Length: 378
Image (cartoon, rainbow, N blue to C red; front, side, top):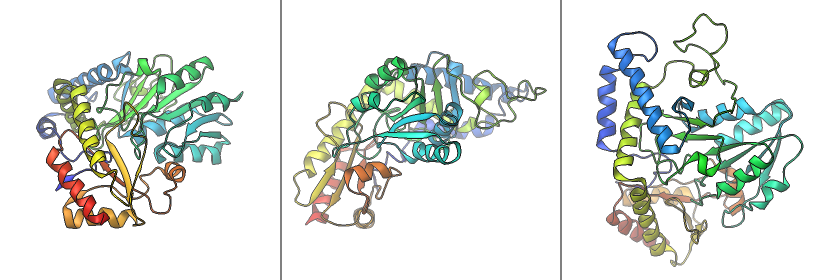
């Protein structure tokens, strides 16, 4: 099978990741829950991985790296922990439902006001619109680093300048860029970045979290056991335990640690260059085929390795199913949990077929996929 659904999850992992998870299953105990060698080894694994993530993302403190299940839990924690009754939030049409649904619920239950920066027909944002939407009660700006549908990357530094000027919290969803391009939260001016481990980071599912700038206070989404301050009736105030109630996925985090080692040793720029090259070969090979409509802005100097398209008036699910059943090519059809982005592109009725590339794809994969698309479009 040719696997081109890496924006959903990377199927092919570095060998070291699998080995690390298998070893952890038989050697790691419960971190911060005892002094046995297996418990201490789990604690060391978690700490070492926090350090690796802080270095990868430019987080100023390793203990401000929070482990959670995925970007969805991280975004829910960040949003519900910083936005309260009658606050105003600015977000965009690019966002995933992991941002949209928590905000819609806050609007319904807490009278939180929402404003959306619209996307144009190529999926780009008008950066000037952010400042125009600011109100007296604006609390935060929440923005995707790269669209999971078009692959367009957003210039976050300009948005963060606006956020800092007005004293707003800037929350960034880096689900599609973490592990795919160099990313430094200080340079982009993010107060909180939310990441997942199973996409570009090439780690196990059930891993992810957030990195928090110093001075940002987040109310815990959940409370419970932490292994420290057990006699206190309140959740510990210090990061990371403040936001990490319950037993962590040490086995998965061991795999994530190995994935980060692979990325760092290979070189994130090398990975990005290969994925971009494969994407461009595919784009150039199909862009002039009659009946193909491609979404996104391919004039951008930097983007993630995603190509979304439709063929004639075919339903995206039919195209994706044909690719899978006839050609053994895995893609993702439908709405991609990005309803406002599809509305902006005019594809809400049939969705789109998304092809997303990874380090483990080859030129031959791309060649065969171009041929399959040509045959379907005939």
